[in-house]
Image (cartoon, rainbow, N blue to C red; front, side, top):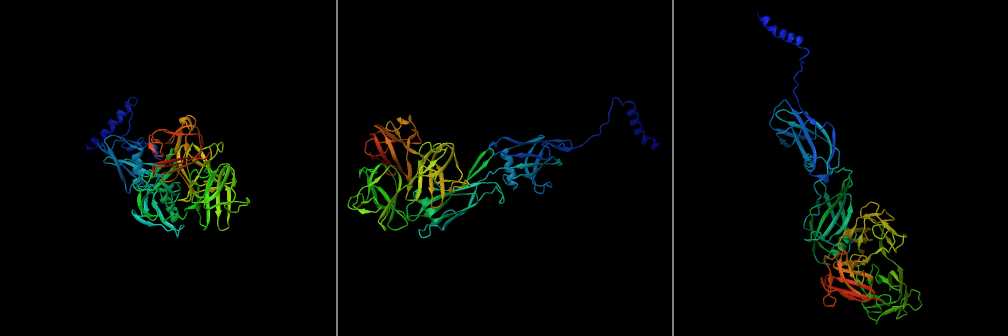
Amino acid sequence: MKNIIKFLPLLLIALVSCEDTEEFEFLPTEESFEIISPTDGSSLILDETNGQNNALTIVWSDNVSSSENYVIDMSTDEAFTSPINIGSTTANSYSFTVEDLNTYLLQAGLYAYEDSNVYFRVTGGEYSDLFRLSVTSFPDSNPIINNPNDSSDISLSVDTPEDVAMSVEWEDPDFSPSSTTIVNYTVQVALADTEFAEFESLGETQELMLDVTHSGLNNKALSLGLIEETPGSLEVRIFSSLETTSGVIERYSDPITINVTPYASTIEISTWGIVGGAYNNWGAFTDAPFYTTEVPNVLVSYVSLLDGEIKFRENNDWTNNYGDVGADGTLDNGGDNILVTAGNYKVTLDFNENTYTIEPFSWGIVGSGYNDWGATPDAKFYYDYTTNTFKVNVQLLDGEIKFRQNNEWLTDFGDNGSDGTLDAGGTNIAVTAGYYAVTLDFNNNTYTIQSTDVWGIVGSGYNDWGGAGPDFALTQIQPGVYYGDIATLVDGEIKFRPNNDWSTDFGDNGADGTLDAGGTNIAVTAGLYRVKMDVNTGTYELNQIQ
């Protein structure tokens, strides 16, 4: 009887199946806990410009665990050797923002801009299947300076100008040491506690270190306003620039402070100058200065002249003066006036040989980013003897530029590696519209372009208060001291303002040569002028030549 009972259920099932074939279909039950989306092997490139956008949504089906809470894990290997818990939910899906997912990837030890495989699974009492994601992250941390130490003391020496005074070293944690990603780094320096409102570049590189020479750091320290032979505090930071398909990523390290004692510049203003109708109307204002050079008794001056005559004299006085009796380049005590034509010149006095030379000399900016490759004169650089560099403050346009000599293409410099190095005949330098301070350092074969305020002359005496073109730009030669020549003014009034804008301006309430914020318009008469504005002393000079 037991045997009959044992087989009876099978018989009944068979009978039902035969009689109701058209109405019933047998479907076996399938138990699974699987990820439905995304599919295994999906690819994802994270875009840093869309940090709060949804990057990834994991969807799963669970008819195994019937869990009321799910945990999402990520791992860099299929075995989930070191899983990272990245969230939990009571739903059957979980989403990540771009920023959050990027953070998890970097925490897992993956490097920015490198294709990496990561694995995801869901836990709800049981493990789901897993899926693999090929993903590329982006950096979200900043460079970190490792050397020099904060509060380091650096004493600069005139005796070893080309020796290394400071090696700046840093790390960029989100990048692999063997990464092929091109990151441009600039070491920037500024006066302490100024929040880098004005700064200088110590150099650019794609490495994680930069050596700075005694002369290089000394020039920048003096340019920023430190006092010779006196300790002063500077801040150093690393600026990182990285071009991506979605734009340029800019990052800054935290700054460190260094205490620097600069040495006195080896170049000084000499007692000699240029006087004449071609420069200062025979002494209507201070003569054009000569500067000392590495060669004793050899002096140099960089000067713009008009058609006319000049002589050389000492201490702005006629007691000692030289001309040229035979127009043969020989210095003759009290000699004849020297005839010159309008232009920019390098004038050299050699008291060892008792000779002089006057040669055309100027450096300027040319390009679609300034003057349509020479449709107008190049932006002229001015000499800064305290740093032995050439500087110009200028408004640039979107485009490209180069640096060339004498408004000609016989000698020009570009930048082949976009690394701040001057390369003879090199690649055009891309620039964006704005106001900049540009410096050429031929001692270290480098240049810098940095945003700044460009002060200029505006008024009925120059450009119809801005309606007839941009203001006449002045260049900051030393901190707070601005020069400009030669400005062609007409009868009228002028003021000084930055960036062709009225947010700030200077006039002169008492017509006494003092700068007054928002002050009275300054009356001028038609003529050619050499202009100086000194915000350190709160004064200005309008020196008329003709």
